[in-house]
Amino acid sequence: MEAKQLKKLRAAGKLEEMAAVAHELDLYTTAGYSVHYKPSRTSSLPDIEPLIYQALTEVLRESPTLFAVPVVAPEQETYYGRLPSINLRKVVTFVHRQGPIPDDAKGRDLELDALLQQQVNTNFKSQEGILPVWRLIILRDFSEKQQFTANFMIHHALADGASFQIVHRSFQKALNALSSSSATTSPDAKVEYVISPKDDDGMGPSLESIHSLPILDQAPNPDAPKHNDWLGNPPEVPSNTGYTTLTVSSAQVNTFTQECKKNKVAAAAGLNALIAKVLFSNLPSTTESFDINIPVDIRPELPPKVVDGVMGNFFDAFRTRVLRSDFTDGDSTELGGDRWSSARKIQKDTRKYFSNTSPSGEAYLNIAGLKGIPDLLPFLKSLIGGPRSESLELAYIGPHVPYSDVHNKPGDQLVTWQAGKATVSRCAFALGACLQMTVVLHKEGMTIGFAWPRCAIEVDLVEKLIDGVRAYFDALGELAK
Image (cartoon, rainbow, N blue to C red):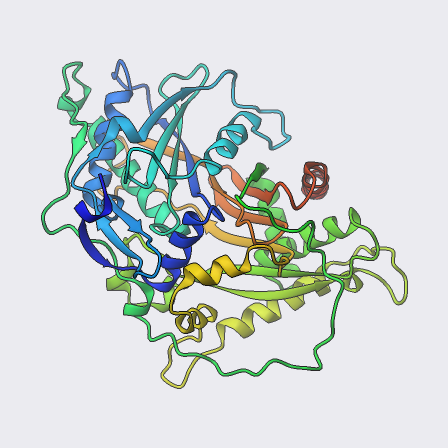
């Protein structure tokens, strides 16, 4: 199928165009969101595969954006076309674990990490023409045949972090409804594999259609101090991502949150400072600073009726700087024990960003600068071969909010699917930071996903960082006893 055969939905907004063009230039492939599901009690389903397909059909009905594909062409407007149908067999893959999910208190799941690393390095290009720009990989448990991890991988031009939560809540809602239906639990239940959108199905709005994106006129400060930033090795294209995770327990997260409150900082700022300190301890003492990019969800700043429950790209980002000297005493290069002053600096920059509003009352957004770039394809091409401009990226997704059926009552004998551990995965943007991390809270604690351009740094540094962060949380756990 060719682009000209697709129904045109609308032009891409600048954030969406950035993601579409980055994918086209092999600077970025995909992001993903994984949730582990288990039934509240053993269901009577002989096989869960029909249930997965039926639940996915309901997701497509609730999120028609999944029928959209971005179309990028030189010297033409980037736009979205709509697929006339989707064959679920071509977008769903079932994989079986080769061993039990680890329960050794190390917070690592190397089998899931390996799957996600392979997925974040797999783009949506195909010799078959235009295909769906998302996929679902079901990783079935080793022994518990009705438990699985659902891994949605979706093109960034269709989904931000909040969009993935929308998709998973829709999926969990469908699992619950279908598992309580006698028609579904029948071995003869029919599965519809080829799904078509409704005639009036569209997609959510672009950011600029609901926000005027006022531009803050700020002249650069010529007297700003220069720092020896950590920028790793130069970028290479195509993007090649290393990926792994660390999960810390709910008890450790609670203790950490209390420590942050005691020191009057938000948990996100505290975690940022912790990661910076551990990294500084594993880098040469000549490394003076980290320039940190922090993406933020701006849906709370937008009209709820327009963005609630709607897939799209509604985020911004700001920067903060962490200095090695924040962790040292006087002229010493030795790292001290206090990281809270650095956390408070990060929090101050965060508050400054969120308090920056225009005379109209709308928030100033840093991505508004993209309005001044008519065509992002030549712009991004011009950046290839240049140096990195940032050290770290840390996106704090917040808590994963599972679907909750308010009509269910205690004692109901219905099969419900419980959402456990959540993991956010992503490709590393080839021109971006040396380490690009995403944090999500969930029922079992907190998972940090670490993505890095393989050309930028060695995996040994990532493992040392993980060991240092885990050692800190383990020590917190001992103190809490």
